[in-house]
Image 1 (cartoon, rainbow, N blue to C red):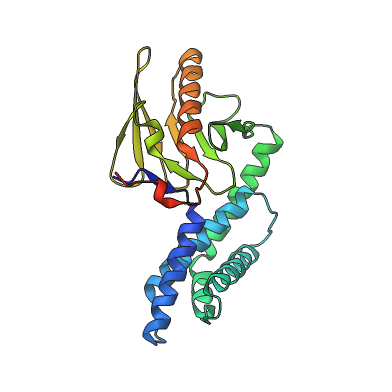
Image 2 (image 1 turned 135 degrees about the horizontal axis):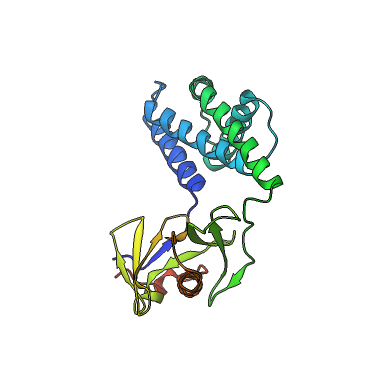
Length: 242
């Protein structure tokens, strides 16, 4: 079982997938419309639109939201392709038509988020924690004046890996690939299930947890994140797949 896996954001996964698909199509020499490329392009566009809304970038019209996402995709794909040239215009046009209604919904979400921030209902991310290997932060999911529904740990923006070997003695891992589950048996709370995704997030649902249990779970999450997030090493031969 693989013990060390690179953390990849959903955006990076979609970018890699789209770029690999384009390279494969170019290699075959076909100019036909590729529905798989169209689907990945559409999903990438959705992901960027949601990111823009969460960042409250102030794009007033669906067309602006779609255009900015499309321009970003074209730029990032071309950077990866290098000297390979591939025209994404027809995919961009088709996705812009198909996602016009979702773009309006994303803009509505953006307004809701702005309003919630003005009313101080959305908790800010906590300060960076410093684990054994690399920094990370822990955030709370839930409105400020209501119960905390989940705790989420994420590494900071620098490149890092998930090294499951670091926590092998502390918890049990379930699953062959993402999302993994890390099972911790706690003497006072019982079984705790932490879910690990490929973007590096480690989350646990905390609905109805009393304050003392929530504090204990936060400390356990901090401990796991502090050990499992590691920086890249120059010599991959130091790592062994188990």
